[in-house]
Length: 199
Figure 1 (tube, rainbow, N blue to C red):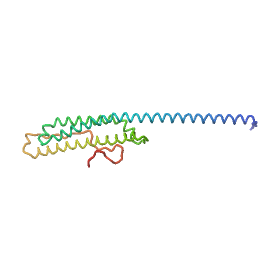
Figure 2: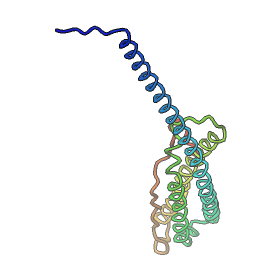
Figure 3: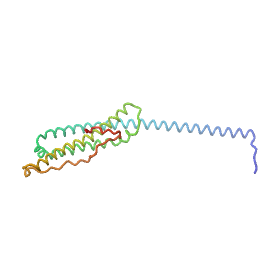
């Protein structure tokens, strides 16, 4: 084996080259870190803007849902006698279908909010307030709807029982219960609280 002796000038040149390479690596690393932090900040700002915009759209859908719920409530309260249920059955079923459509609109407007609101922390109070309001309103809408369908079906069961046990069986027919697409109460954020459930 042959060993080469490196002279003092050569050692300085190698040391200088290594130092320059190290400085270049440090500057490149710092530049990448800056770019990544800047991109993260832009993504975070974009995410906050998305939450604000999506929440405003969601709020409009919730207001439509509330109006439809008021209509349903008023219609059910107009049913004073069991015979009223048979007379208004088709109208009520259509109202419940319309009611369910407003819930489906809420689902569509909630798609991105569900992704962006859960398992993320936000330092801004206004964003946290929107996340919290979204959670409460979303859970309430679905859970209220399920309870309202159950209230309607309870009236139908009472009516059907009356038809089966009374002497007017030839006059009135058995009514079908309303079949909803939503059957289970929801707790979307997993906190153990089912907002809107009266139990």
